[in-house]
Amino acid sequence: MQKAAFQRRVIAAALVLLAMLAVVAFYRNTNAPPSLCTDVMMDADRGAPVDLPSYLHANADGTAILSLRHHFRYDADRVPQAAYIGMAAPFLEVHVNARNLTPQIDLERRDYRSSVPRLYLIPEDALRWGNNLLSLRVPISDTLGPTILGPMCVGPAAQLQPVWLGNWWRQVVIPVICIALLVVLGLIAVVLSSLYRGAPEWTHFMLAVALATLRPLYLVIGVMPGGPELWRTLSDLSLLFFIVVVHRLLLGFWRITAKRWAGIMMTALIGMQVVMRLADLDANRWLDLLFWLGTAGIAALLAIDVCLRARHAPRIERAALYWALGFAILCAVLEILGGRVSPMQGMRWISPLGVTVLMATIGFLLVRRVTMGARLLKQAARTLDVHLDGVLPTGRASSLTAWNRISEEIAGEERERMLNAIDEGFGARMLAVLARIRDEMPSSPLSGEIQRALLDLRLMIDAIDGASQTVGGALELLRQRMQSPLDAAGLRSQWLIDGVDRVQVTSRRRLAEVFRCVEELLSNVIQHAQASEVRIIARRDQGDLVLAVEDDGCGLVQPRGSGRGLRNLQARMHALGGSFSITPRAQAPGTNVMLRVARI
Image (cartoon, rainbow, N blue to C red; front, side):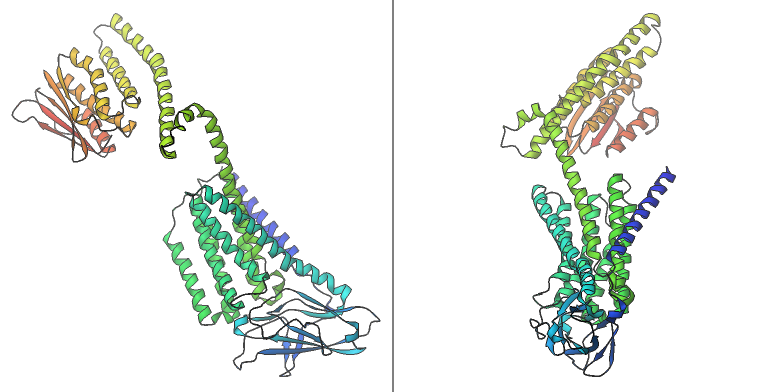
């Protein structure tokens, strides 16, 4: 068994790694020919080289526009030329020989940011034979977020357009597809949460979908009311809150108790992110890298904790979520490294894919449970058709009341079936054995033991029978069963049970235990007390049910708590959460045994 479980885990891990390798192979940027690209541009204002790719923040001297220049040669005859920029955030102006290729760009704008790959076709009349000048003007401002410049290439459009198209598909189309899928999941969650208002899982799922949508929306929206820096802050915080909500969702989905340390760690992470943003510490790339790697590590720790404590969950659910959680966390790690380590710039924007796969998996499992519940309800409706006919016309009753009535009817029918089977099968056989023993062995003690076993069986059947709804009615049934052995022993009996006629029976199991206790006490009176009269008194006392068995016999001859019968009585009362006491009768010979329980 353990070997099979280990093999399943190895297979699941291998599948996750294969999926990640496929994603890495698909997601890596398509690179232009190195001969067309440059990794250095000159700062036109300072005359200093600027390495590409670059990750820049606003300078202390207040520089607002970064002007970069690159010289390239045009020697081809009538071959369309293009300029390709793999990444340029927030936005930029592009000039070729003083010809503005981006007249729609306003460098003073503060509500726009886009870092998608760009391809600019260069008009033929803007080119000169031989040496040409490409100029870039990029705004640098705290309100626009960090300035990112990726690889820059100039050359034949036929070679650069496939590069741009491949990277545009990865960096634009896939996030848009993720947004569309998340919107569909959100609409499904809205509909189902309105139908299942008592299920918090759907509320958590809707919130998780909303938080998951913020990140890809920030990547592709372009126009950002309030400023790109505000949207970047919301995007980063949404990732942290997404971890919290998904953790709560999985805990509720599998009915697992939350651990205090998980809440403390996530609160600390959110607080650290706020402090880093207020103190502008996120401008330090390596500090930012360590923070997000730590966040991914804590997310992985929470996922492992949930998975280890969900061993009771169905195997298909655990396998699906193991895979989805591992895939999402690995995607997040690749994006963290790809966005902050220059050699891996091609792996940016992969986390929305992992998050979308995770939410689609969770949504599938939630919908699966809903459909399974619907099929069960359909089958239940067919099975309960007769009972529903008797409940549905009474519109005044709530659904819970109707369900309780149906459950009681079905339970009663099942009890009746079981009782008939016991009475006609086991009971009849035992009566036949008793009759044979009386004929063949009249003096054998087995006759009395079998009679007591049959009485005990009959009392248990009476206890689980739904005919008696009140404690008074149940005790009256007990009186009828015990009257015959009491009469046979020459004992007069008084049953003073009027005080509990209106007390409802809430648990058949507890009623059966109380029947066993009273039957044990009456058997002790018959066998040991040498009494002529016994009284059974039932009353309410401060909300508790009190049962007293009094006899006029020889009194208590054994120390309290000794004997198998008294030990059984003590164990049963302890299981019921009650108590009992044995005392001599006041001003008269005999014994008084009092039982006290909170309810039956």
